[in-house]
Length: 71
Image (tube, rainbow, N blue to C red; front, side, top):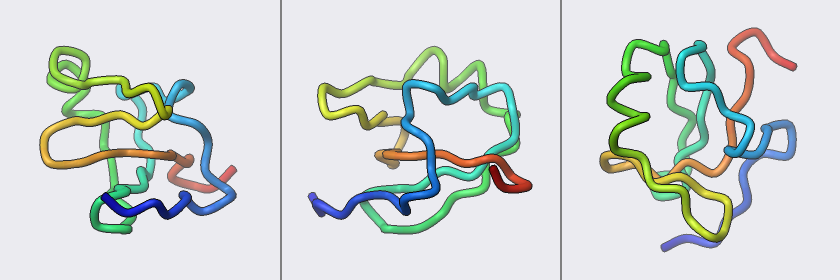
């Protein structure tokens, strides 16, 4: 798996609220994914918090998140 770091403006995944819209950095593809919050229930049921601070869910490994409008 790549060892890139998320863009420095993103927050740690431990602070991510899946019920809120956000952008997420996928470590595997090195892409930003838009999160609408619609999958919050599925995320709560199936995500895996990893020891390195990333979160695995479906085919993604998220390593940082940001507010949709910045900040």
